[in-house]
Image (cartoon, rainbow, N blue to C red; front, side, top):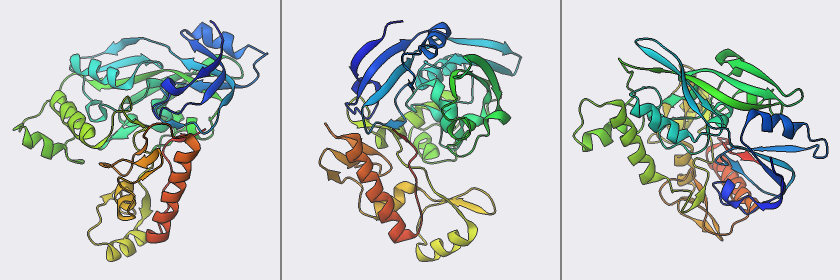
Length: 337
């Protein structure tokens, strides 16, 4: 394990922010991780995975540990189901494609979500009506203070909407090393009602879709709305969709009867943050090298050399504008560093 100095993190974060890591090392094994945490000369450690759900607003003084643990394996299976274990450094979308090749169902609606496996439980990632928790069995994580591996069940993870134990009580205390998911081998449950999946399938003349068809539809929809971070720096959806109680929803819907919404329960409704932002006039607007994507107002972008602080300033401006107009508070989905 080699420690490098003054490493640009531009290629390690999908926003393409040129923050500098004073000290940096690749973690290619559990043993590397143990050794790294025992380096007393670097008292502060910074965990870096796929860099897809973070906004770097400053250089990193701590020792940056880039998690590069690899491997996908089947740990158990029956006639109907299979449990797959993937190491934290594996790319999420590549895992989805691998499961589709095996005809394992459950992840197809989450195709093309950027990032690596290790950060998926932190955010309880999700898309098009499906969340990680729907297939999640357990994850393994190293406790930073002891370097011991602990197993976390679904209940332990305390998943919520883009929330988990690791984002709250366990923040900064653990590093996820692997994730195990239970997927279907047959009799797949198909979720086509959320978003534009049905429309995309119909456009392609597909009336009896497979899990691969659903994945292809999701990929087509995402590519039509979301920029490729390799071409235009971004972190996908920057903001969470706000969930409001029924009394606020009733007042909101009276004032904005054409606004889209999703019923979460008898007491809660989700309002698309992208619609709120677009109504405030930000969609497609550019502020120097920071901006809001022309096809999806949820996505903030780095056109070239924007700093993380410039993007954060834009985010705050959007949050304030939405609150002033709609009396709804939206919050970043990405981690601000």
